[in-house]
Length: 176
Image (cartoon, one colour):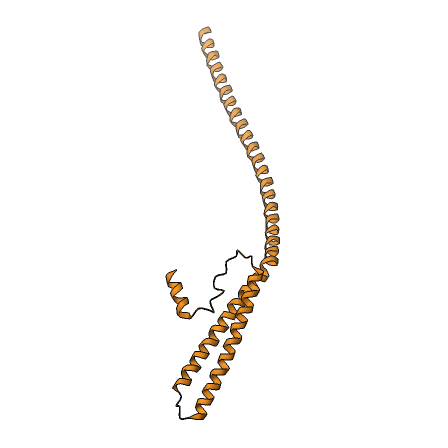
């Protein structure tokens, strides 16, 4: 009987010890989960602070970018306008030269015995020649204004396009 009581006591002791170990293991697991939750919470707060700071920085950089673009346009705006003026003047000059060439071709095909037709064709050629010279002067003025606005080292391609014939320009584009 004493032995049986001893065995039962020992069995109860081992059961209690096993329950204590299990409770200790559970307590350690819960403490680890609580620490992990606290770490995640602090990481979340830190990430939230960083996100807010980055959002403020993005707004500041966007405003700075707008200011820089505005100041660039204030500085470079006249150059861009002058470049557009040169392109427009070159197009107008090319159109005037084409009209002049068409008028000259038409004048050559007019019957020489028709004095009135020859006179009208020559008047048309003179009119288009004057318009072509006027457009050439506009190109010169626009080009001069652009070169005054640009640095002396700035690129000046296509500023003298009106001097070369369309055939020469086409050959240069094919070479490049």
